[in-house]
Length: 495
Ligand SMILES: Nc1ncnc2c1ncn2[C@@H]1O[C@H](COP(=O)(O)OP(=O)(O)OP(=O)(O)O)[C@@H](O)[C@H]1O
Ligand SMILES: [Mg+2]
Image (cartoon, rainbow, N blue to C red; front, side):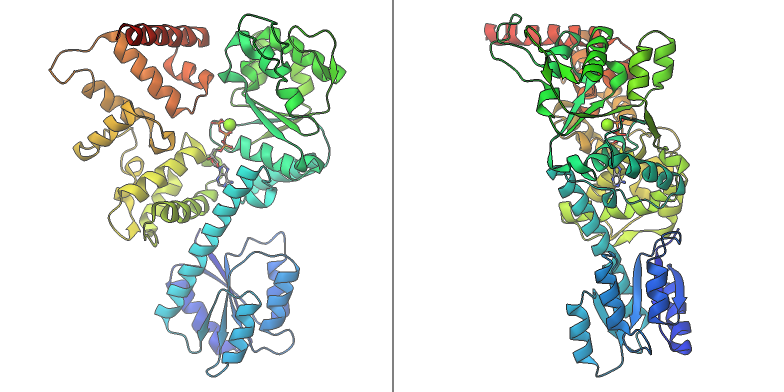
């Protein structure tokens, strides 16, 4: 699953030479003999994607400049390194202006070629990541940002692209961290509603008694505490898309109201007198089997069929391992830039072991693993040792060196992405923070609320996930939080 490099050169000897070097650098080489063939290969939607191209400038027929032009016209996004004979500097300048990433002079040395290819691939991965993040922030994520190498994923994306051109209700199913929200955003960003709002509601994170008011709004004075009128998420998403994340967590009473809103195309605010027409597209997501919830009587069947019109199942990472190296490179490029670390790549050994791991937390876990590796690594290349999850099949206990980090994260877990994996941290926490500094056992209540705060931070406020992981009910979770808050305010009042 090495990066694929396309080599376009009309000279057979040159082709063989460069092909050899590219392979020795650890990449897969694909060779073509003309500019026409290069363009055909790049624009073939069924052929495996090319990561970079080595392009000879002087060729009969369509020459290098012509290929660059075609690439630009077709909007193909691929780094190109041009090869030129000695003295062809004018051509090089034109080629760089036409979008080439770098140039090498023939005969190129293996070292020069390796550096040029590595830079081109790293820069390209970084550009893609930055663009994806910017698009996500601006609400303009499209399918071009959901890059994948997997056939299973391509099939999902094909259906999603079709869905984007209509307002058909979509239910995105898949394990935690597989990219359900990314796909929901891409559907929104690729359709007619893209200039209108994308409003995400995490149905699992709202206390039961507030669900209706948050979704449908409330009038001033509708209930104790409703000091202002509130429009609600449906109205907020008017003309755009409402993303109902963890829809399976909706309480039954809210399900009734949601069904009515969908049937009638209008919502009624809590305490409101008349329904208001709304035009929203619904995309929902769940990491549970919604049908099982229906069978168990926890989810209304009629609502299920309303939401489930077009189901999309996003495969877990272990079912699309070809995406792992690709994602690793993207995240590496991003975190190196963010953390200002000059790491050039991931060793072949680490890459192949990481590709074989199961990644139960899917893309989110992989992302956090790379983040941690970049921050902690000391070399200029990431190796197996930088990925604790690769060296031990079960959750590893952090080494003494990482203990301060663990404690820091437990107490001030403000940056949840910093937390590599809950299991080892909690394991460490269990043995470490049970004791206070004066060797006294800490009260159970205190430890409990610390664990809850940690879990909320780790699962980014997804309360139903937190409840599930802690094996308590959602209402118990909220009660415990209320109690802790009450205690806190009492003790501050006392002070
Ligand atoms: N194709 C992709 N390329 C790069 N990063 C991705 C891709 N898909 C998802 N991610 C990243 O992976 C993480 C998880 O994605 P997302 O939040 O969409 O998953 P999810 O299925 O909604 O997870 P959960 O069930 O936990 O809510 C995010 O940080 C997201 O940016
Ligand atoms: Mg999500």
